[in-house]
Image (tube, rainbow, N blue to C red; front, side, top):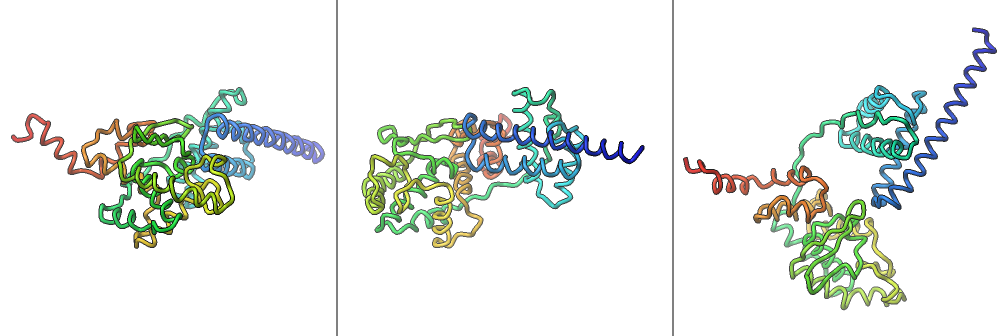
Length: 324
């Protein structure tokens, strides 16, 4: 092929890739707006999805692949490269989940004619049991806040509500004062996709929340110069602003260190403990699924592996040949 013709062809290919890249990034911008404002994904999920899809787009650029129209072979190659790069299976699965969600939206919106991403199987995940907090450690943690201070009363309410509701940290960060129904003894939480659920709360947690709202929260707002009526957030900082997930996590980790708990204990471990304690106490899976806000019962069944004694007792009590 003559050099001039080859150069022209190369420039044409380069222009085509640049145009495809621009279309992809435009679609990504629209998709991020959709999941943030319409689908109601949490800010953490939005950031993660955007980062994962951008990583996929950069890989396509390096590999000379049209990111908006990959083949199934291209996508499998991307996952293989992640594996070779030493990424954990859960991380690889998270990348694929984000890419699949993006292309599913692109198909619905008419941005692409087909969606091969749905044909790529999710990596098989190693089955790991959730970490939980023992009864003894839980009592020590719940007793850690210094309730002679406004911050301590707030922290006590935070810990009690973590354990009482099984809430995700983002759900507690979004909690408003109006979400607590004192007469019904329930808390309203907004989970993934802004799905609402009502969780009954035990008396000790309600009492800690009442003490915080009646005494500590007004002190925090007054010290910051903010008016009560202008702030709807349940958990507020010393600056009188809503505490986001990072602020709540920081306080939680500080309390865990003070209680002498290992660093593996996170706010999500409180959620695991809530679920396993309910199952150990005799709650049925469907109820725990509703309380956790799981879309699929299969997600909730993971907790049954943590309570084998309960399952053995169920067999011994219910199976017609249990005594045989």
